[in-house]
Length: 153
Image (cartoon, rainbow, N blue to C red):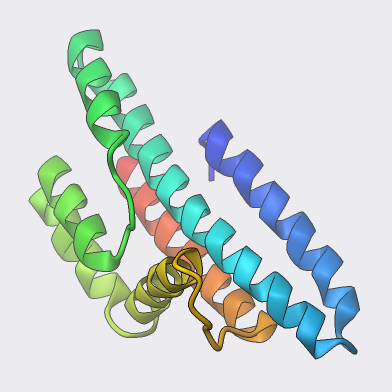
């Protein structure tokens, strides 16, 4: 992961996951933290995708086009896999096909679950997300981000 914004966000999340693991004896506290981490993991995914594609546009396009892309990426939210693939297809249809094939199954499910749970949490609904589950989802989200970054390198 090379984009500075994504790297900082990931470091922050890695630190939080490490701190929360010490509460292993308190399942209620871990459940509360798991909800917070779910929101942050969704934000990490959103921020990373914006940053990666924004940096790609900056490196490969004219300054005017790169500025336009950066502005358009500002409205990219709730990054379920369908939306990620749609955005990727706008950059390169072949990348979208590769990403779709690489994320089919567990990675797609993790991304979609993180965003769906985040939306439920944001609307005050109870979700059954656990610390172990969000940690697994986070690892899958990192894989998706790394796939996208690899395509843009």
